Length: 101
Image 1 (spheres, rainbow, N blue to C red):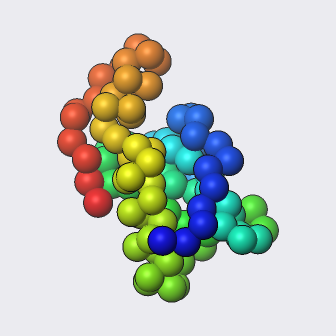
Image 2 (cartoon, rainbow, N blue to C red):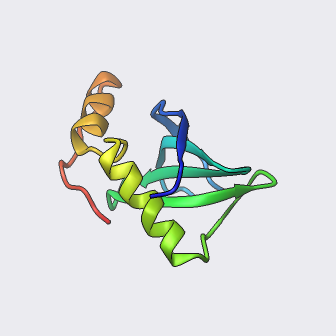
């Protein structure tokens, strides 16, 4: 697996574009000179990892890299439903307890 480094694992709410969809930042990861963000769409509980380029999120075209990043996030516990549920509870809310991919 590639050499990834977690630079932030703070869970926080995100606003992406003008969307009313709720998102949670799960982690920011460095690899070489690139930066990636792992985030969760709250309604579906689907996790995503995308490249941060010029302040914008871009789909990762390299399928192998995308899979390595997703595996790293899972193995590092960044996408753990328990972690997310604990954060939601600390904010006074409830989680539906499911995890998507």
